[in-house]
Length: 240
Image (cartoon, rainbow, N blue to C red; front, side, top):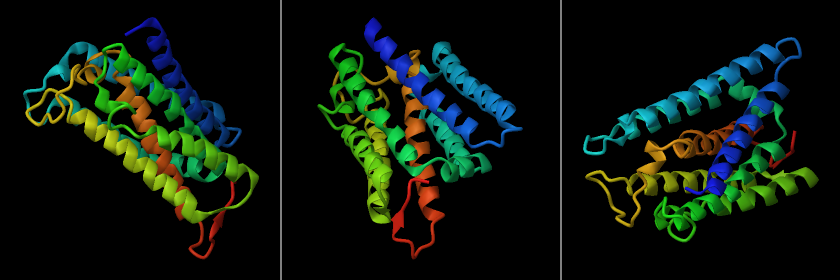
């Protein structure tokens, strides 16, 4: 991986981390803001440090075991993401952050997809996990930016937000499925070189599935929670 790609990975991870902590800060009462944001920062550091430690230990590099350890890790992280989304903290994030921001922050998937393609060009990732192959998630990011701009200007029919949210969640999960089917396991379906093992064995690439993918899933769940909080008879949504 080139130095430029390394900086890009770290920059995207930093953006997502800062965005999450900024959301926690903005949605807390003033007398509890500092220590609750500190707790969130500590939890995020443990999440990142733990996944990095597992990658460096080599425990995730076992692929002849069914299911492989990396699968357990992803399921556990996704379960944690779901718990967070539907926790009291998730409720505050979903209800108190303007909808335009909840949607617009998913624009980070545009530079992410450009980065994945660059990693393919550098021989780090196979073509099928990029937009030159079977990864169409860049559409989610582009549509997120357009929808966020629309939400900032006026009311938007709930159906448009729901449609974008469903599409984005389906696309990110399809990318995960493609990556899993590209791992060197007995269930491997994509054999293009190089294999995707690097995303679970190398640092900072481990943070692609453990931080960036989880952030995308969390964002969609928060939007679903926000939309579900509106009365069924309300056909339009506002940014706040």
